[in-house]
Amino acid sequence: MSFWNAKVSSQVQQWLLESEHPGVRYLALRDLKDCLQADPGTQKAYQESHRVGKIARILSHMHPDGYWVKPGPGYGCKYRSSVWSLIALAQLGASAEEDQRLFRACSYHLDASLTTHGMFTMSGTPSSTIDCLQGNMCAAMLDLGFGDQRLDRAFEWMARSVTGEGVAPVGERGAEIRYYSGKIGPDFQCGYNNKLPCAWGAVKVMLAFGKLPKEKRTPLIDRAVERGVDFLLSVNPATAAYPCGYNEKPSRNWWKFGFPVFYITDILQLVESLVSLGYGRNRRLASAVQLIQKKADARGRWALDYVYSSPWTDFGEKNQPNPWVTLRALKVLKWLDREIT
Image 1 (tube, helix red, strand yellow):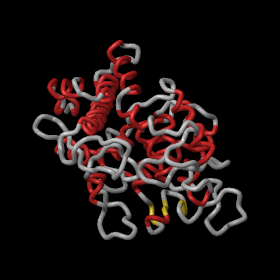
Image 2 (tube, one colour):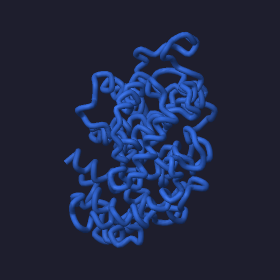
Image 3 (cartoon, one colour):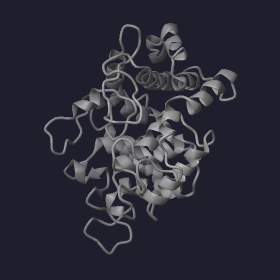
């Protein structure tokens, strides 16, 4: 079976390549057509997306010092402050190499948010670290092409937080590295999920590990990946039947595909995280992949189901065919096709 050819028509690709948004054209050329960065058409769309596209729009609101909205760790003021702006820029294909403002923004964010032991935080202190934030920011920094040795510590902490190696329990207040009320224990235990493992956080963490170059995958990280994959495949991912914390049923947002994807996670991103780690052949993914395919319309396009409030720029009309979401889905199906065939 070819997941890619089953849903990708030349008309859909042309729809993306003729988009009014240079960012859509760039991502279609890069991720679907496999065009090299040096290709003239790819380079033109890439540069335009940084000059006049969505990337340019978000960067226009950045303070010269490197933050959005207000100084500090940048978690507050959803969804315009530094955390959300950097995540959106990363998913749009922005690059610190193309625009030095991004290098400044990433550096500022690490200064303001990252602790000595590698925890990305909401307030600047270790007690405000959580899995979804850690995974999102580690993934964003890699996608933005930002290299900083402090990120090695961030990935090490993220791995330790999953396995529990070298991390003291919550109550050991004198310990140098310990869990807190938010990130409360190993295997994605989260205070915001009634101290139960949080699958949204797990997906973000696994997605970040999937973006990490293989040569940087230490034995510790490999153990963390194994535990994360075991957790995400412990149920049929299409059901999202993970611990719900304070609710009786999984959030309906699992089945709503959006763009950009912030702390909420959908089944498409769950599959993306597992495929990026080489688990596309796992039989437990079959139902989730079928779900993704069935959500496409007759022309092979996916709708924007979920919209965050008050971002710097809009990404289309809700419940209508959407190029950004379509790019997300087609990219995953193409990866699947390559892995399985």
